[in-house]
Image 1 (tube, helix red, strand yellow):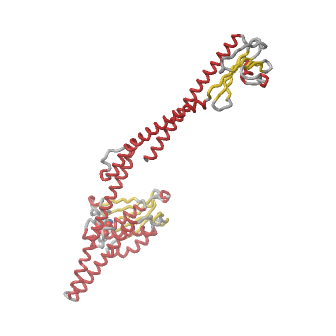
Image 2: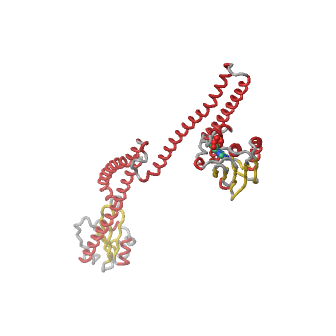
Length: 444
Ligand code: ADP
């Protein structure tokens, strides 16, 4: 950045100087030309007044003025007198612009480039009473000579100013960059330090990302701790029961019971590991899941089919309502979402209760609703049931094979599908969970 600013500053300086020199020289030269022409005009008028040139045949002008060239041109354009050149060698001057103008309007002027680039010839012509044109001419420096004269000075000024510009940019960029470098050095204090207003949006984002990172890290740590803790209980049971059997301390009846316990705990471990894997899989997934337009009602039919046995065992009436409804979603995730919600509705229900699953289109959205007449979730827990390992009644959850991860998976899946989850529940009365999917067009 410093380098860029430096180069730009120097470029600007050079450009400014060049523009100033060009414009000022132009203005000066304009004034200079006027002055030369004015002098010529005065000379011509003075000569006209002396009537030296009135009689063409007897011109007795003794020119001391080496600087001033005087030419007399007759009506037909032939040169009849010239104080510097031989008239015989001179061609017809009738079509010289200043002469032409003098014949036509009484006076004329012209500036022409001389043989060298450095000089310009200035001409002023006036029509005399005798019908001839008297022309005075003078050579003076051209604009190029003016440039040539001032170029050394301009160079000195340019180099000086460039040095000043470099010094200035050095200190300026240093003072501009200093706070940014300070910020980079003290990332931890970000947000507390004073800085440029323009940088604030970046700092806000960085601070937020910083916090998110910290929160993520602590969440992962907490998750790992929770998983380890959850795994410990069934493993302790398995270890204990197997030890008893191994020691030969259990009779045949106990052995059977212990084996059952080992089996149950092993199953619990399996579900726990399964759910944990599912969640971390979704956590680290780089790519979006494979999506397709699928019929959510059909998926609900399948899931409810598999859960019907569990419902009967719990003496609960499980029913599906609604109609074909399309969603743009991942099929496996949809099965998982409906399964988890319906499974919960059965497990946290009462004998002779009911579970009603409805899939239907509503206001352009596809809505899945799972309603139960179960134990409900008290208000104070409603916010937190979607957290990992959060359980209202731990023993009931465990007894019915819960891991505390089901709703966390549901929430994760809903997020991936930009679906909204609504939870309504009253302790002792029942729970209604609605998942509202965006309409197919919205997804495009
Ligand atoms: P779990 O495996 O324990 O069921 P979930 O994440 O599925 O874990 O649910 C978290 C907690 O929310 C459950 O332990 C339970 O206390 C409560 N819960 C979930 N669904 C219902 C429901 N339909 N009715 C009552 N409580 C529920």
